[in-house]
Amino acid sequence: MPKRPKLGQHFLQDPEVLDRIAGSAVASGDTAVEIGPGRGALTKCLLRLASRVVAVEIDAGLARDLPRACGHSPRLQVVEADALRVNLASLPGDAKPDRSVLAGNLPYYITSPVLRAVFAARGAFRCATFLVQREVAERIVASGGSRAFGYLSCLCQLHSAPRLLFTVPPGAFSPPPAVESAAVRLDLRPQAPPRALLRFLRACLSAPRKTLKNNLRGLYGADLVARDPNAGQRAQQLGLEGLVRMWERIESQEGPRPGRLP
Image: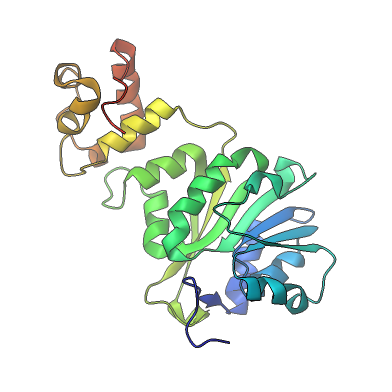
């Protein structure tokens, strides 16, 4: 094997951690779609529980070796593809959404794009369980008042009910990453949040140190925003629930002006 991993790969090798992730991700009889199986350590754990595993691997060499690493299990399907380009919703096949799950040890630099792809395919899956950078996991589950709270928090909590399961030290990987990791599970919601709400939240959190009055005036106009009782606060002070209520108040008076904010 190469001394340095390609594509940001840090291969998880701790058996206890692997079992915990698989046990959190999948129930007996599920179809599991694994993103980035690498050398197959987590894949083998998933195969012990799931009725079928679909492994999506971008690295041609790893994809070619995966069936052998997993004992040529007939319940394993390897898809050599970029998880950000493949149609995730099609991978469970005939499996029902309540029996289909996602799992994986995600390269840190593609975590946010993968989450967006998962949310786009949410109708095909019950939940997603990923190992990510600890800082990112903390942002995913952060609530108002926390410095970690931001747009990623809102996006993940509107599309799912996320939970930080446990942390993982660098020594559980080969080669060890420079930071700690954490397992997070997202129980996916059946419906997507309104696009107008996401646009509002992106504006609210575009400059976290500025007040909502300043962040939103380009979207709604200064006068309308200034009339809201929370206009002088920062987004982190309100949290997601408070921001949603503010959006509902403003939307009831006047809709956003298209084109003012990308």
